[in-house]
Length: 381
Image 1 (cartoon, rainbow, N blue to C red):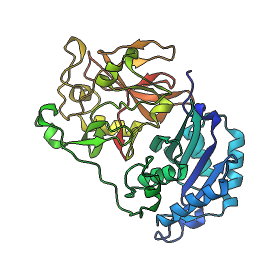
Image 2 (image 1 turned 30 degrees about the vertical axis):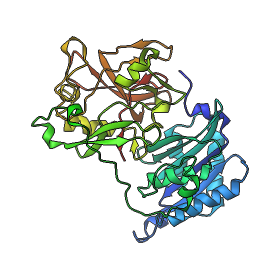
Image 3 (image 1 turned 180 degrees about the horizontal axis):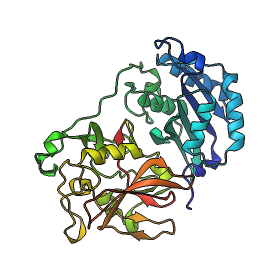
Image 4 (image 1 turned 90 degrees about the vertical axis):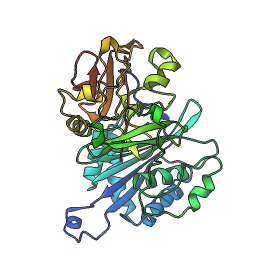
């Protein structure tokens, strides 16, 4: 198996776990108007640890969505969990920690130093499904404040209007901006007509394509609503230094097919407001496109597939055969097959993915070693 993205956080200097949910059976019997409990835990002993924890606590309380539990109520659970864990922390382990704490969700925020750069990664794991329903990763600007980034990430995760992602010049402004508990709108700039896929009768049942702008690098992606969910209509092409690749190490293939990501990186790279889809969300997409026996034909792009294996692209999803990269460094199947990760684990070393091939109309499910690299399509939170 290749190196795990989370496993690369062995130099982790700060990690926070925010436990959001009903605190106990007794709480569950109280009125539904009572705010769910939340707690903040900071692993390690970074400089300013108490101040950082206080800032995150304050932000969550000011959001109007949570009440805080006593610090010592979560420290005991987190300390025992840390003792049981290795450097690689799976969603299942995080969900177990949340379950032991009486929470419904666990929001994990980690900071690490890697290759001279600082990163902050956030994921919201559902205790019930053991899947990260939200994930975001951003490079921390040199001299930037980690609390600004964390507040922005958590605010976006909770559907608040927290403004643009903090940058060098926006760090202080991000802290002073008022938090408004309204969903952050998706930028809806129509794609030029020449680039939009031709409409069909079936596609008319989907919402017209809009454009998502990734605030991290300014790249734009078409999006389309299928089965009531907004999907990116292009493969993700966000460059991260660890765990992502261009097919054949050729940058032009990233421009055409998007990047290939190992599973642990794939969980973290979707733009703000989007996440790596779960197995169930892929099921919903396939069902909305007519079922697994025909969905491949309807979701594949009208060009780009070898041996006339193109699709009808009835819904504007425009799936392309980006191939894959094995952990031994070999690249395979470009032009012939498309592979897309789901967020759902099969085991500690394997996760589920979906597959389309030039020669069949199916959308096939299988599972694969997490260290291999596949394409990523993100779905809106």
